[in-house]
Image: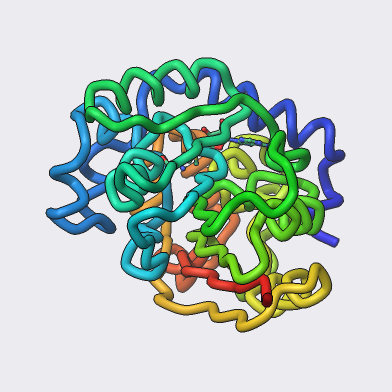
Length: 264
Ligand SMILES: C[S@@+](CC[C@H](N)C(=O)[O-])C[C@H]1O[C@@H](n2cnc3c(N)ncnc32)[C@H](O)[C@@H]1O
């Protein structure tokens, strides 16, 4: 299995050090690709500068006023802030991130945006929340970063209320990537090396107990898109250019929306 080419602890350490080291996110070059004007206008500049996601969950998440939303891997707060605005004063948005630095940034950005979102430090493999407390789980470019994706999906299932749903954005791959890319810590941190095929993603969701699985809105993610993120160093981009066949340079992976429900 491709995710076994690096040990779990190595992957975890690589992801942690990559996200601790970056000086900023992808900024407007990233947000302009995915977010709509009505979402962008809810955000302070800092949240936009620090955008690191691979799409926009909101056109599909259909967050309603009063809902309890959990944003897994909330980074500097971009999606938690939008979720807090959509959930309104009768709802609540929680952001979960493993890095204290991201939590601090997210809190500052939420305050600047005037929303009462809550940010908690923790790992998606062991979500520090009670069972059945969340209506909607969102996430943007994060689940791929875990070497224990089935565990993460089981944790999402556990914290969702019966009748709750998840709506996440992540990258999938149709064909395995070359081994030098799969074993590159930087490519893991960039969400590419840990990407599952759509088929494997569905199988994991089914096994955990999710129903009504829908995977859609495919958008190609090639070397041009990768270069927008500070995680893809020039060395890594060169390596990928050399290792991947030319016809894959515009289509390294696919950004998709994954929706699934926890039945009543
Ligand atoms: C690609 S960034 C996405 C951030 C945010 N969702 C966005 O759209 O800008 C990934 C985030 O996931 C966090 N992360 C990585 N592994 C994690 C884990 N095991 N548990 C919780 N957060 C994690 C990182 O610290 C980082 O903030």
